[in-house]
Structure formats: C-alpha cells, structure tokens
Length: 158
Image 1 (cartoon, helix red, strand yellow):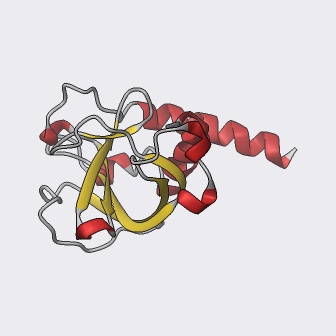
Image 2 (cartoon, rainbow, N blue to C red; image 1 turned 45 degrees about the vertical axis):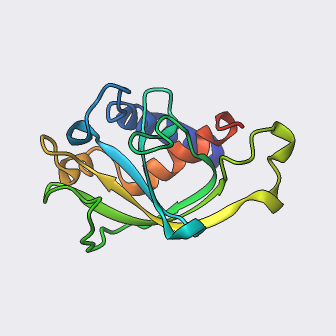
C-alpha cells in the first residue's frame, strides 16, 4: 500500500517537473532546471539542463548536446549560498547535489557497470530571468526532482 501511494505522489510531481523542461532551442536565460557537475577530470565544470526528452544535456561548449548518464543523485532539501559564474541572476535557487554518472567516454551498453561510474559534487539550479526558483519550489520540492531523475535513470543509456 505504501509503495502504491509513493508511486502516485511521484507521478503527480513528475507532471509539475515536466512543465520546467527545456527545448533544445531555448537560450541560457530561458533554462529552468540546470545541473552543474564539478568534474574531477581536469577540474572542469559541466553545465547541463533538463530537456523535453527527460535527459540532462550539455547546452554549451564543445560537448554540446551530450547527455549525462546519471546513475544516482542526491539533492539537498535546502537552498545553498553559492556565487559562481554559472549562476545567472538573483532569481535562482541553488541546491547542492551529489551525482553518480557514467562518463561519456563509455559508449557501449556493456560499459554500464559500477566500476566505470564516477561520483562528483554538483548543483541543481532552479529558475531563470522570468520565473524564479522560489516560484518553482511552490509547485515542487527538491526531492520531487530527485525522484523524477531516478525514475528516468533506466532511459539514460550509452
């Protein structure tokens, strides 16, 4: 019974999250949900956004269009104070996260094994110049987004 109730709640929150997905043609200023990954490789930062196919895809730089193959994610419940170049404006809510993912260098389904996963700290950023992250938190909470991502993990394939 508890499992059925949980699935129902997740399904309801998923519909709220779907309204915040980005089309590939959306600009940086229109992006509603961003995932910033503080990569260990060469200390680079990778910025992704949630798109209409439920993938987090890079939308700038050399690897534009590549999706991150998330294997697990934990998102903090409360906003963090962060000042960095990838935070745009005061309308955004920044949440710390820990992301386990399969790096893009692994492109075969047989590579999708625990030993190939990497783990990195990152941030989930909600809101844009027109609609604040605080307004988004009125219709969803960070755990809703975490469950939404976890439901889509089977779709993130090499």
